[in-house]
Length: 461
Image (cartoon, rainbow, N blue to C red; front, side, top):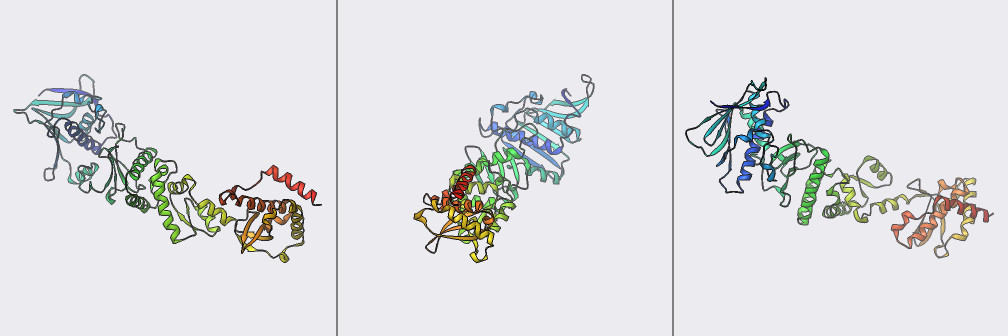
């Protein structure tokens, strides 16, 4: 029986196991079918049969003959076919090496030839290598098939789920499809957390809310998809999915992502999904419904923010960071304005009779000092309060038809601080003419305010 030696030593890639070998054999068959489809429907058609009684797996491509050069490492004609899974030309020889190393009996029918791989000593290389023995068959079987004996039913049950085309649980109708990208979002519960590439399972991540079938270039070991790349590619796919569908489906997609408390897909403010205008619109529709149920609801993405919201009297709702980013996109979010308004609320009015003598003295000096700058058009009462946010010192509001300049009791430690608090209220009063959005930025610089306070107190002596 003729034989030829490969340059693959028996110990090459020791980390590869049976799972890797089956993956490469079936992937090659899928590629054979993909390439064959460009010629005529029968050529390359794949068939996978498993016989549990004899524990045999037979993977066949009809109308196909593989040249012996396919056993050369690095020899691949798939590079010109973007749809193909394998492009490195190492899948078949590596699979045969692993199967032989694990002592599985493998028989290849290649048209009118039979190939039998084994590991044998090489006189040329001086060590054990992968060897292919060949013999002619009496007739041409007009197909390329790989038969593996000794594969336990439980092993095949596990391994066939690595391929969407063989996965018995996969429902091809329960997907979100990107025709342009040749990719799919897999909505089935059994697909949650699974990441396929060109129909072959690459990795699993239990924090993913959905499953995915991508169409990207990987390295030989299919381990290119780290967390960064998973987030990038799934974000691109989801963004396109939100863009090319109806509002009803957008809301349904959003709900599916939200079902997972800490969906990996939403755990980023920098991805394509958070920047998608359609995803942002979907998030805002969802948020309006939350506000209808609770006007005090505030979206937060960490516990520190949640504690701050509770302190302000809001009801924090924990959401992933991509949603908080979407809600604040384009400056449309009212959350900042709501928070700023709540910060400036007076939780208690302090009667003047409750003030200490030093506090009352500081207030009187500040009132006298600020007379020249208080706008006559907004003449009103001065009210001492405890603000909801203790860092707020001064504010202006119109309450029960009366203009009020609110001063924090905490600002009455000195006349200097009291003047600053009143000026804060005056600048807010001025800013309100330009709209509520400008109130948050209504302030002088520290240097301007220090000079102003010094001058005003001096003039009030």
